[in-house]
Image (tube, rainbow, N blue to C red; front, side, top):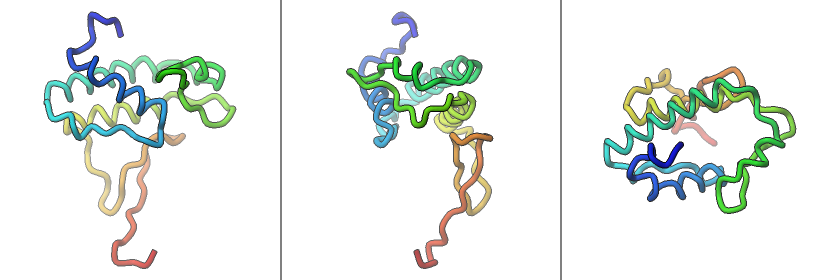
Length: 132
């Protein structure tokens, strides 16, 4: 994104976003984003990125190795087969919907599951009264 189009909060948040992108075990925590304008702007950024990323060809390990997003850490790429961009784009679109309060609830007794081949699916919740 060109510097002139970046929202005012970007400079204070870009490091945290890069950490989440480079170190996937940490996840992305948006609990501190209480400002509705920031949430809406971030949702718009996600949608723009989704449109671009979802329309492209699969990503290869070699290509991902060149995406340095945090200090000297590239994007984590698991496996050696090209990765379809559509499940990632679907996840980003769902996050934008969530930020806007537009993500519909999953069917009763399930959680939404994103990022797998074939698109969004559900996972059955464990019965809290059942043994492990």
